[in-house]
Length: 116
Image (tube, rainbow, N blue to C red; front, top):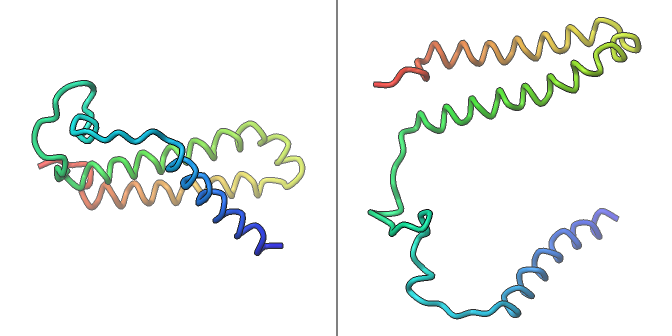
């Protein structure tokens, strides 16, 4: 059964990409191959190196967005979960928040938030 799912998972994208390559119109030109920058002519090289801190900020943003995605459903179902499981639910979320705060303090200690 799992082999069927793996086969279908591999076969469907291969078939879709193959069919789209055969059926699409293909008229390449130099104008179609240039980088699109909101309708303006591209300036400079497309391989620009960014500061690593941009990626760190993005990673921290994603972490705290995931936290919000976990906190909202937990908060809406808290009463029901507390009745069924008890205060362990509160301890679980406290542990989750504690780990996120420890990560934030670690990033702060490593001076991730300071620009030079």
